[in-house]
Image 1 (cartoon, rainbow, N blue to C red):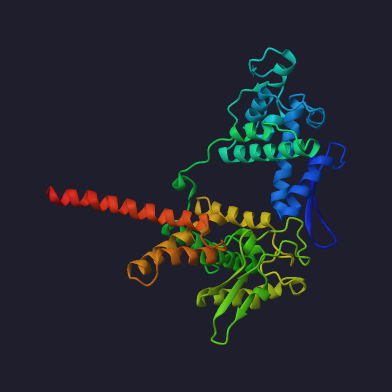
Image 2 (cartoon, rainbow, N blue to C red; image 1 turned 30 degrees about the horizontal axis):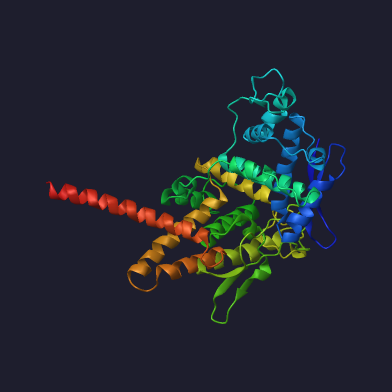
Length: 408
């Protein structure tokens, strides 16, 4: 069975290759990742995700009886009905695709040639994946096949890439549906659950309890991502002469001191963020009283460690959120803290705008810096639109109340 294999080079750089069913690296997919992805500075996580999609593409082609490389070498580019079949199969779960058998209901695309018609078979079930995943799969299918066609025939003009991308589902324009943050009651329950002084602790170990409380406050106060938090080092904490404390989030995709094969990555820009007194105290308590007691903690600079002294993994971090979720009885995940931070930022900045202490443009630039985005980022604008929509809803309610008052 084909597989994506990660490894660490002697330089500390993480990379990945696609292996065939015999464990041999596949020539063209791996050449594509080097030329088209690695040399353009794509992260290991992006490369691995694209290789997983290329792996899926080969599985679909195998089910349809298509030898892509031989077809392209012979200038027998994919037919429309084959592209339709690939596009439809891209909407199924991997587990469903792995279990497809010939006794399921089949639909054929109308085609006069029986050989080509057989390639266009697809299985009809209701086991679909999200539109976002289908969009990503078809994008990566199109990019790889388009690259392969150009690699073998640089002057050939084909429609494969265009036809595949045209079959991607439309991206949702509903900002509200994809935007989840915690309300004040949920935040209270989360902070109460991780409080070391609470009566019913989630974790027995003092170290794990204080570490996990710090993790929650870092997410809440900084609005950072998982990769950013897991990349923090003690050396990233600096104090100024006036007593101010700063945490610096740094991009370091090939950190030789990081022993994790699946290295958490900082997706956004480096920046330094001021820390308030409460978070400063929690950092000091954790580092001096608890982190220092962990075996081998002195061998690494990473701030957040496992109870064995290793830099905490993303899987271990996700487990912490799972354990908190079981206690508070709702889904707790890292990105919701980022959304919550942005809600609080919008509330605070709106007051400053209304009092003339700043401008909407400056607010967006400030948000972009604190979140690690480039100036005039669309991500910053997305959160600003969220705040604008909320104000519009509140204004709409005030209009309704005005009608009520006038008709009393």
